[in-house]
Image 1 (cartoon, rainbow, N blue to C red):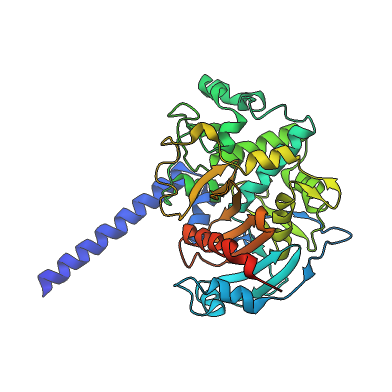
Image 2 (cartoon, rainbow, N blue to C red):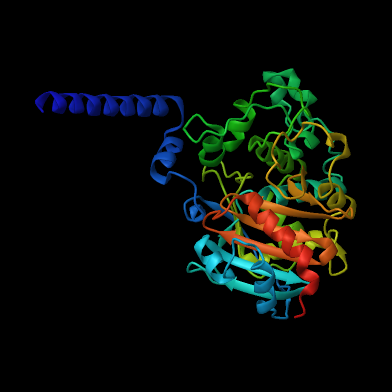
Length: 405
């Protein structure tokens, strides 16, 4: 027994020494606040907006209101056709859902909140923010602030050339398509890019100084959070204003957001928007962003986003059709999927498309233009796989003609 105790003590001492060495390495290699964030906060969660500093976005003076045309029984009946859903409300509660909205023809058919959330509860975007960033790029091009998606990113970020002239081959389009060839690792440890792009205290420096090209641009899809950071700096320099201020002026207020919103920042010192994630608002206002795209960028007679940008962003790229560009990314989707300009899309057999902004933990703004349909889901966790959610929404859209509110 004593021998076993000595062995156990030795193993414990070894583990503690290894942890100590790892922490010493982390504090030597990275900014201390970055390491402390990782230690204090751990895995990301939907309440992280309370931890980061932020830049506010004011609600519209005259908020837009969807009509109300309750059809809860019919919505439940259609969604409960899925074998995994016996009772819709119980399913949404059990999967960690906070908000679930179904809107058709500008009328709310179903609006329910779960897990202690309410209509005025703040929900966060996670990667839905990427779709907002894409919209801002389209607006900046329409305003002549950015010339084209074919511009090399070094036109706006010339300091990248000093590190590697190959950055001149990467275009804005490559960033939007997630195909820059920039190295990205998804590990969650301190040296993993997922952790860095989420918790780092100077995201501008991270994207400008720590990125490395490993492949030619356009060769394959790789989900990469360095891309929205680079796009954010391009927007800053092209518009000469913070990205959140540009969003407030060009989208948040023009579409009648009912509540104030915010965009989380990397730190008080550097004041750069967390472009890969941190837009915070209410579910009903996120639905308005879906409505903006459903209506081809037009809002109550005002063209907020160019219609050709909306179309380009939400339709598949024929140049990658039939190639290995996506790998097995959409292998679990029941229909043919695609990714375009930071939107996730599904091709329908009749040539129509549905598309979705999608964020970590299961944040969705799903749009089916052919059915005049918007589905918004925010949650504390996925509950089911993200492609299962998209399949659920896609099947519901197939059946929605049967709803009579």
